[in-house]
Length: 66
Image: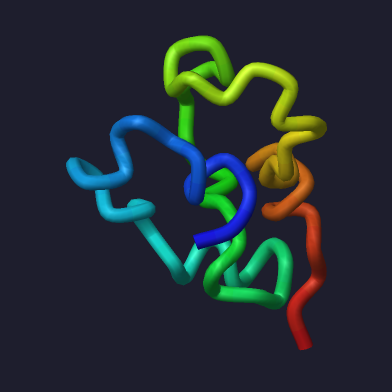
């Protein structure tokens, strides 16, 4: 696991959560889960850097499909 997930004190509980979300957002299934709602302080990774996040739901809906 990379990013916050690799250093998270709860990794043994959630197992990095959803690898599909990480893959979709970053292109790497082993990156941190962008859907994790816990703060860096809560998971014990102070100073872990900037987090990846999903686009707002409204932005996703606005995409025109072929």
